Amino acid sequence: MIPLHLALAHCLPELVLAIGALALILVGAIRAKPSDRLITEIAVGVLGLAILTLFDGKGTAAVFDGAFIDDPFGRFMKVLSYAGSLVTLLIAQDFLAREKIDKFEFPVLVLLSTLGMSMLISASGLIALYLGLELMSLALYVVAAFHRDDARASEAGLKYFVLGALSSGMLLYGASLLYGFAGTVSFAGIAAAVKGTASLGVIFGLVFLLAGLAFKISAVPFHMWVPDVYEGAPTPVTAFFASAPKIAAVAITVRVVTSAFPGIALQWQQIIIFLAILSMALGSFAAIGQTNIKRLMAYSSIGHIGFALVGLAANSAAGVAGVLFYMGVYLVMTLGTFAAILSMRVNGKAVENIHDLAGLARSDGTMAFFLAMLMFSLAGIPPLAGFFAKFYVFYAAVEAHLYWLAVIGFVTSVVAAFYYIQIVRIIYFDEPAARFDKAVPVLRAVLAASGLVVVFLFAYPAPFVTAAAAAAKSLF
Image 1 (spheres, rainbow, N blue to C red):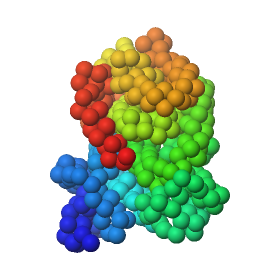
Image 2 (cartoon, rainbow, N blue to C red):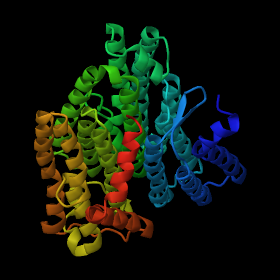
Image 3 (tube, rainbow, N blue to C red):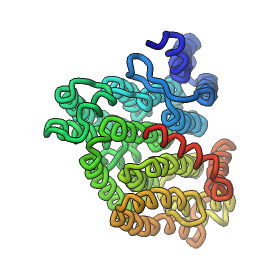
C-alpha cells in the first residue's frame, strides 16, 4: 500500500487544478463583479502551474487501490489537454467581453472540466473512468450554453446534454456487463479475466463501452451532435470542444483497449477499424458543401479522429505513438484555426461564412499566410506537420498489415484536401470581401505560433516524436 503522501504526490496536477478551481469560485463570489478578467488570468496561471508539475513525474505508479495511474502516457496526454484549456482561456477573453458574458464562472468551469479530463486520462478502472468522464462532461454541458441570451447556444447546450446523457448510459451499461462477467472494475483485472477468449457478455460490454467513448471523441456513427453544437456554441467554446476534451477522450480510449482488452485485440480492432473508416469517409465528404467555417471544422474534426484511429487499429507501440503525435499536431492546428476564426469580425460583429475570407491575402497578408499554412497542414500537404502526423499512423497500419485501411485513409485524405485547398483559393484568388477588424494581439500570437509550428516541425521533430514513443511504450 502506497502511503497517502506519496499517493497525493502522484496526483499533484489534479490537486493544483482542484484547489485552484475551488479558490477561484470563492474569490469570484466575493468579488461579485459582472466582468472579471482577473479570474481568467489566475486560471491561466493555475493551468500553467499544473503543466509544470507534470514534468517532475517519473516512472509509473498506480495509487488509490489501482484506480488511478501515473505514467508517461498519462503525463504526455495531460500536457496536451492542459495546453488546450490554457490557450482556450487566452483566446476566449476578448470574445466573451464583447458578448458581455465574461463571467468568472467560465474559467472555473474550464478548470473543473480540465480536472475531469485529467482524472479520465489517468483512470485505471471503470469507476474512475466514469467519474472523470462525468466531471469533464457536466462542465462542458454548461459552457456549451454559456451564452444564455443566444438561442443557438442554448440549443447547442441542450442537444449536447441530451445526447451526452444517452452516451453515458450506454457506457455505464457496457461497464456493468464487463463487471458482471469479469468480476472486477480494474483494467488489469479485466485483462486477466478475459485473457485469450471472451464470452458473448464481455463482447457486448466492450461494444457498449466503446460506443460511449466514441460519442466523446465524435467518431461516426456517434457524431450527430458535433456539427450543430460546434456551430451553435460560442466560438471559444467550440475551440475548447475541438481540442482539450477530445485529447482526453482519445487518451482513455487508447488506455482502455490496450490495458483492459489486450487478450481480445481482434474483437476491439474490428470496432476501431469500423469507426475509423466511417469517420474518415463522412468527415471527408460531408464537409465539401459547408459554407459555415465552424460547421466545416466540425466535420474536419470527425475526419481527423478517423485518421487517428487508424494508428490505434494497428495495436502496436508504433501505432499508439502515431496516435499521440497526431493528436498533438491536431491540437496545434485546431487552436490556430480557431484563433483565425475568432479574428473574423467586421464592424465589431463576428462572421462565420467561409466566403467572408475572400481576398484576405490583400487586406491582411500575415493572417492569410498562417491560415493557409494551417489549411495545408490539415490537408496533409508535405512537408507540413499534418503530413507527418498522417504518415506515422498510416505507416503503423501498413506495419500491422492493414494495407487496405491505409489505402482508404489516403483516399479520404485526398478528398478532404479539396475543401481545405478551396479555403486557400478563396483567401488568395477571390475578390476581396469586407475587411476584418484589427485582431487582438493574443489571437494573432496564437495563430502565428501555430502556423510556425506546423511549418517548421519537420526541421526538428525529434523531441516530440521521442516523447510520444516513450509515452506509447509505457502502455505495452
